[in-house]
Amino acid sequence: MYQNIGEILILFWRTLATLPLAWRQRAKILDQIFEIGNGSLLMVCILSLFIGGVLALQTGPMLVNHGLNYVLGGMVGLSFCRELAPVLMAILIAGRSGSAMSAEIGSMQVYEEIDALRTMNIDPVSYLVLPRLLAIAVALPTLVLFAIPVGWLGGAVVCATNRHIAVSFDVFFQNLREEVELQDILNGLFKSFVFALAIGVISCHQGLITRGGPRGIGRSVTKAVVNSIVLILILDYFVTRLLIWVQQ
Amino acid sequence: MSLPAMPSIPNVSVEIRDLHKSFRGEEVLKGINCKIDPGGIFVIMGPSGSGKSVLLKHIIGLLQPDRGEILIQGQSIDSPDIRDIFRMAMVFQSAALLTSLTVAENVGLFLSEHRLAPPDQIARVVAEKLAAVGLEGLEDRMPNELSGGMQKRVAIARALVGDPQLILFDEPTGELDPLMAVAVGEEILKLKNRSQATSIVVTHDRNLAFGIADRMAMIKAGRILFIGLPDELKDNPDPVIQEFLHAELPPLNHNPSRL
Image 1 (tube, rainbow over the protein chains, first blue to last red):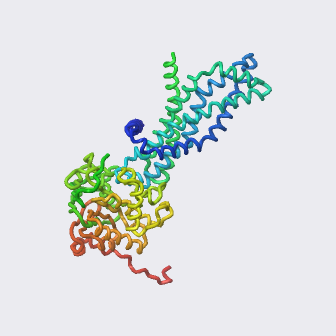
Image 2: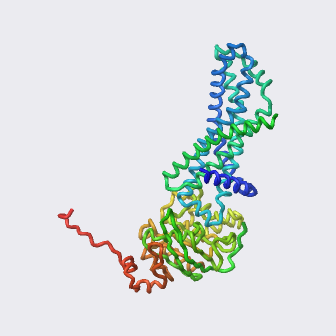
Image 3: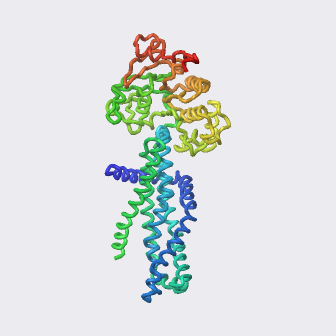
């Protein structure tokens, strides 16, 4: 495990060192952004709509019973942009795009395509890892930016239509505007940026160390997704602590 | 990363000194020593699992030895700038074409990634190299639309595109039918006539080996048994070599009563 952590950090550092070559790889970066962003947008919106709705549905009746129906907008708004959107979208992208990254690079590793790149003096880090890491670092925060208003909308719709909650759109969004600040949205975007880097580097690393044919590729994909999700949840705690500390 | 515009010399010598390599405690290369002169075709022959491909991957720097060294024109393959000084290419057993790229993008990858030529010039060079291996007009095909033999010839075209001074072939006729194997063998011979690069071919195909080799080595169980001219190998009295060279399937008994 410690060897893997060391290798992941070294890969991350080597990828950062190839950043000056990013312009040269712009076509691949744009392709990857389109693949991750456009390919996931519908799923992100559906997921966000229902998560926002469930959040309102779970907490709404209890708050209404205590006469706190006017805080629902702020509660759904804050919890969604600070926590739920970045974490759940990151988990979604780890499953969808992280797995694709590790499978593609793993397959290239197993079928000697990466060796072929090396014999052509082409660095696999700048050719394969850099475009994917930059693309996911752009695409995931962008998706979170879409997810946040859709999640709010889901919460507002449930609050307005559920007869046990019955909080109008106006009340919901008025409270949301009072409670949610730009800083909260930026915090969520920053978290998703950190998660994106974690997913990208773990998935690419897992692809690069793939051995042993199709079974090895399958193992790498599983490890990439599981390790990414675990790291997202661990990082979530520390990044939240960091953001709280910065704001104090 | 800088590259010389054109190689200063057309070919390079390769020297292998006391090369050892183990995988999970099993020694695959047991002290290989060999000197390959510049130019010509050097064939390394031996049975499957004898360490031929591992040796080839050491020569091009894809694997690191446990002990020993490889010198390209007197310079260690581990030198950080060795690939900036000498141009080397390898044709993999599996062809190893990038499946997400077209044939033209595969062949022109070296030039485009290193920005050695503008796109229109790269397209011309790609067309020229594909024509040289008899695959003109296939630029826009994807690798998975080609037969195994065609993929191998695309891999040869890709190797040629950088005007290499050293080309390594790993089982170039492996998995090919006899006609395609002859075609690939002819490509290697044509390549020798066209470019003066040093070619190292690893194979267990006896017909290919004796058809193209200027010099040969025989390797078995991680040790070199013989280095010399093809005729000297044929005449070598070593029973291990003779067994490999003359291994034949015994005539099948088609007597139905034995089935």
